[in-house]
Image 1 (tube, rainbow, N blue to C red):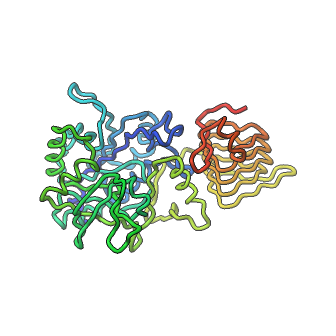
Image 2 (cartoon, helix red, strand yellow):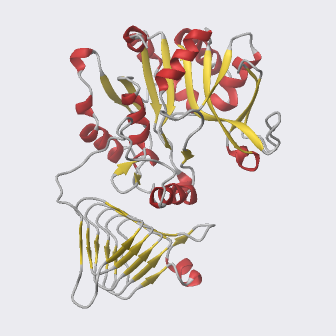
Image 3 (cartoon, helix red, strand yellow):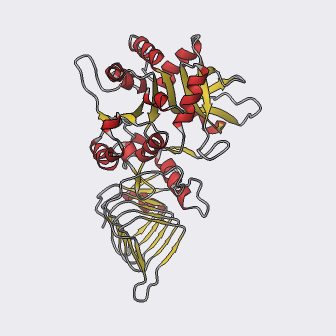
Length: 408
């Protein structure tokens, strides 16, 4: 793609959601700042896609519990952008102007910052979500948008119809033009020839700036929910504008790929567990499309035997600075500064930063947030009723222990 086209495009990343369904992981942090895969934050995947797609003019729109997210972006991402070349990643919290409130919806978040578009005057705007796990070349989607002369292009993916009521669902013609769009329908329309599948929005949009500004201003004058999926996209589809669907293709693949919406604790757990399969569903080791993250100066992970207690690990990820001393761990992710003491057993679990598992303790099917110490001999994830009395337990039976909780 010509550099001048990328130079005429900015990315606006929506990273201000409350993440209520990820509570207690989002008690003190924004959803995009939630740790993932041991060393990453969820936001790192969207920002890596931007950088790998050569989109280097980025506004990150934040709102709820944004301190840790701001800190992470400043520490981990600022060095990748050179202001002398017109590159930037700017954090944009709500401005609270006299006529504005907190962001009322995804479209309102862009509308309240429409002055940024007036300042930068891009020809195209890529609107992204900061809470999905995937790899995608946004430049290819931008190219398709420009070649078609579209007002809006929507990234789309096939999902099981039984799950489609969580997404915006569309119908398209043979040329990928969107014929109808319904946000979170109770009875999603099936795809032609695929009665068990629906075509869902990924929450990824490419707009021609002039049409985006016109539509946002018109929407702001209504009493709508000021949401892209509920209001803006259906209005554009019903107009005579060209609104296209762009099928998701992972870089290096001919079709499809891995995409996960981190909307609930169970989906968060499942996406992490996808990384520790013998053949992971999501490849973190693709040097052609690196996922960047902040790496503090930590020593390598250390896995060692203890007297009378040999270390044993299977299908795990270990982050730098972690120590496993004479313990058994399988199908688990061990983050920075985690210590697992002799005789402990950890299975199918996520141990976030600075967790300590005491000697002889047993942990199964659990998410343990940072700064938690599990006492020696404690048992978590085995007795469902006991766990419910102490912790949050999800519909799928995953035990979630909040950050810094004192166990006894």
